[in-house]
Length: 128
Image 1 (spheres, rainbow, N blue to C red):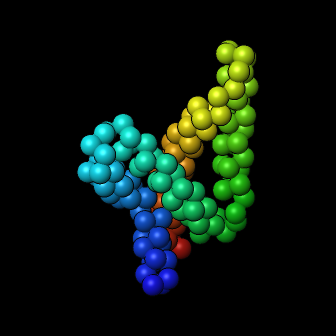
Image 2: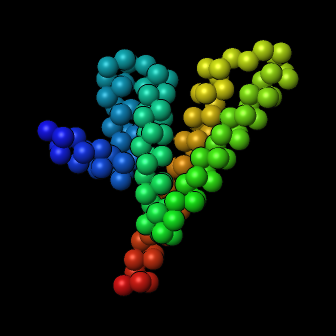
Image 3: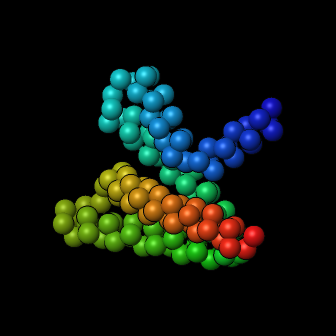
């Protein structure tokens, strides 16, 4: 059973965009709400993208440093959003900051995934 779950996670983490559409479809069938389905798809795919980008960066460069730089950038953006919200409204709404950070992270890690995926394919042809 654990091997099945590990294999399933491995497949979905390797192809997070397939996961995105699958999760969106399942959530839409259950809720009949497009916005909520999109949120669920983004949240779960973001978690899958974290592990996928980390592993792709390790495969392409041989180092984990890029993954930590991306994660640090995500935390820096979250801190900036927190500061801007405090300056504009005088209060902090953690849910909005977390949601905005996850959406930014989803875009950042999606772009990173695409770049690293293409670089990995190209390097596999070059290295032989």
